[in-house]
Amino acid sequence: MEPKLKPLEVVAISVLLALWRLPNQANAEPQVPCYFIFGDSLSDNGNNNHLKTLAKVNYPPYGIDFPQGPTGRFSNGRNMQDFIVERLGFEDYVPPFAKLRGKNVSNGVNYASGSAGILDETGKILGVRIPLNRQIKNHKTIISTIMRLLRNHLATNLLLSQCIYSVQIGSNDYLNNYFTPEFYNTSQRYTPAEFATMLVQQLSRQLKTLYDNGARKFAVYGIGGIGCTPYIISAIGPDDSGCVDKFNEGATLFNDRLKPLVNQLNKNLTGAKFTYLNPSGNPAGLVINGTCCEMGGGGGELCLPNSTPCGKPRRYVFWDGVHPAEAWNKIVAESAYSSKSPAEASPYNIQQLAKE
Image (cartoon, rainbow, N blue to C red; front, side):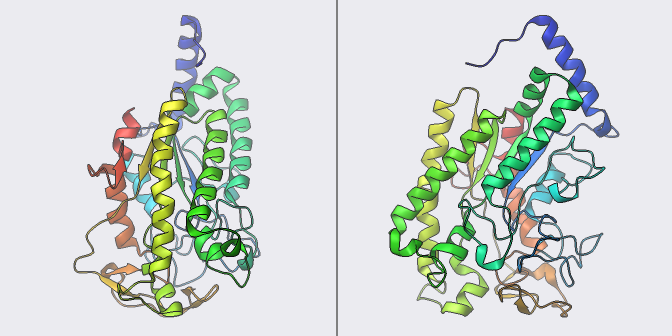
């Protein structure tokens, strides 16, 4: 059961939350007090920069359309989470956990890590990464920081209950685990359906841990068309569909288990507001079968360091072999934020979740 607050406690907490929000009050107040980001390279904005890994992009031509240049975002500019943060009304982007020294955490924290997965071992072939379990541990240290600042357990819980927790992860559990049999034996141990079930069960436990630590509003993302990425198509060869079907079939199996999990968690966890998101958009007029930068960095799928990219990145869906360009990130972020389609956002879009 949710704890009942006495009237004086409500007043005290309201004052504390008002003080907590003061740094964000220069203009309009954001739609939620803070935004926490968990995930992989689709959301990473610098957590991998100083790790011993091939999965980092703090070099040109990444960031050519971002004001600060290469920051560790796997794009030419903003990633999808940056656009969502803008739509929620935050003045600044959510800082990466790795660069929090001296930073204000009142807007939230980005824990995402390139090549990370739901499973701890996922992505190890590329080097050091921060799996979802470790990201959750990092979040617990931030909760302790918030607790020290607010000096009130109930105020901390109330604040966290109003924030949105974005969880977009799982692609690497296929790209850098299940479909990499030369390094992993998961495809020998599990059928595709069994692997998807195991992944979603593990994710369920991880989401419940976040819930037990105060989270109430969850935006949980499905896996997109990983079999249609330029790197996978070039490395394996397309099927009749033009994509590599087994990768997309794996993603579909995962999504088909994730959607009912969201409904189950909403039913079983008191006060929880989970939503399933799988945003899409119309790529009409955009290049969908090529990359703007020359591949060759990382494990072969990233931009070749210091290479010259295409002249019009706004025309491309893919920046490198697996990551979207800024133009596409903006399209799917708008879909996640405001889509009315149940296939893209169910039962809420981000805008609706913020109001819950």
